[in-house]
Length: 114
Length: 144
Image (cartoon, rainbow over all chains, first blue to last red; front, side, top):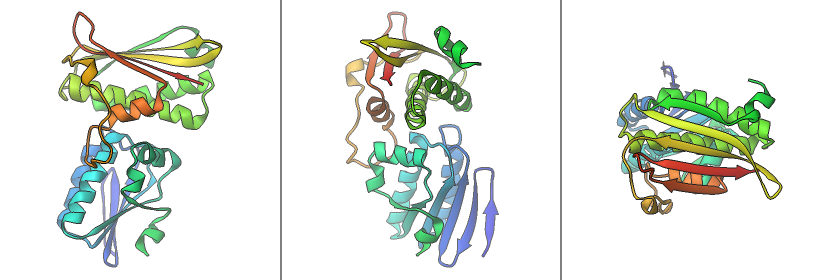
């Protein structure tokens, strides 16, 4: 298992999957950094990309937009991208925008890796 | 700031069109919403709505340019026995016809354009206008 870290997220390999564990608010200020990091991961075309949001207390529409863009890019190479561990407030943003029906959302990273 | 002070008179804050400033405003709006009597989850949604409104000023009013002013006014209101919060968000950037500001089709899944939908869904009232001296003015209300 290898890993990489930055201020906004830590990345580790779990078998065939890449797990990106995001930390802190994902707002208009920080989502560009997360976007850059995720695009770097996606360039490597992992078969499964798990975005772990358990340590994200707040996300706005820029964060959601970042994840939508990344999901579309993963689908372009026939990969899968799952979201895991959403806190209630963050889940609420996905519900308001009806994107909870678009993403595969799992309660935990362990479930997302199954 | 104590709860009574937060609600005693309208709150005025001038922020600038820099995304890094939004976290401090979120904290202030959360405190004000909780002091007004909103449950924690509703207070969190109000924070999101105001954050989206400010982000729209930065993105659309000022095209992402930093350093431009945005004025936020918040006050406790009572109407027909209902208590609530009213926010006015005012920028001095590009004007657009308020009738063209609307939520987009959510079935078209793509990044961007979700802010107005979020504000409209969360708040009880939402009204955009074009002040005569330029910029945009947004008034939103939420009742407990």
